[in-house]
Image 1 (tube, one colour):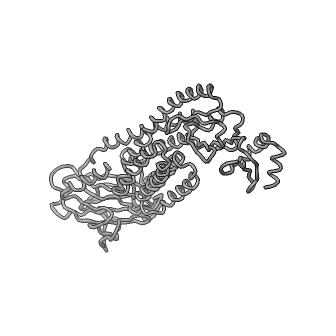
Image 2 (image 1 turned 90 degrees about the vertical axis):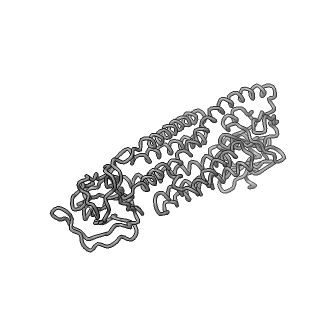
Image 3 (image 1 turned 120 degrees about the horizontal axis):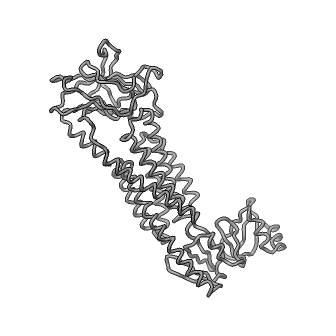
Length: 481
């Protein structure tokens, strides 16, 4: 956002400045060749559309008026091209070396300024000539020339916006480290996804600030744009992965496949700003769908997550340029930093709840103390048909079709449950009391329960399941399937 405001203010503050962006209103394309002191131009024609030197040599000509006042000014050339500039037949300088072929061109910087001495101005009708070529672009850009303009010299400082961006980047990298530590302790997929979200957003903040920090050669600009889109695409997929795992785990596979396909399809959009904005909007929209499912299931934090996603979706629809600039990093920081604090607080609370649950379990060994959004509830172990993992939560499938969410991880619960419960899949624990048979279907084993749908059996756990069940009965059920 700060770049857009800065350029807009500067643009309107130049009373007699040369204002020529990609529309090329005041520019003519000519045939030209070097002369003794200045290039010789002929057959000049007005440019219709964007100024595009990609894959060719281009001679440009424009007539401008002298800026009022005596403040220093410069001709700024912003674009993916090498360039040389003349004013009134005298050379201002060169940015790289334009040429008629890749072998004769030396790439210049993406942004450069050619200071204009006051003595070079005429009273009226100053002729600017720009020689450009672009044979070393990594990708083809829809708007390769971002600006040709006379503006105050030097360019106003970008220290404050760059400092803000790097402050956000530092906060995001710190959040990535914090979630990585939490993942090493808990091995939860949500912590890993949040570490990735924070790290990717922090890295993109660095990429966004390169133009203000490094006077890089124009071919790098193409790589930078591809990198920004790729990082945004990864962020969008990770955002969907986190929200789906937390609020709608049963739809994770289908929504993740849709997210990857939809985000990849944004590469087909014209312009890298649009590609990047669409990739992020796809992630916000699909994450919003999962958050809606969480709201319908009355899961904790689902409403807050949905509201936050909706706010930034609205910003993206109303002000798309804001979304791909500073507001993107504000969204990322505002999303992951509160979650980091919440995770740290929850770790402490879970330790306390575990101690209380263990104490109650000693007093009631036939019950499981369940902590959920409804409070604390004691559920007889005999009522539990199966336990299904849902990242940081588990779903208890109970008799009579009842279900309960329990704020515990499957690995921890497996260690606390008695021997009658068996881990039959990476995300399923079955109560053997409720098993009525075993069958094979599609090359995989399934446990038939006296209530509810059959439970999947992992191939590597199949021998353990066979040993745990009555072998003659098992073989008979297998033969009947």
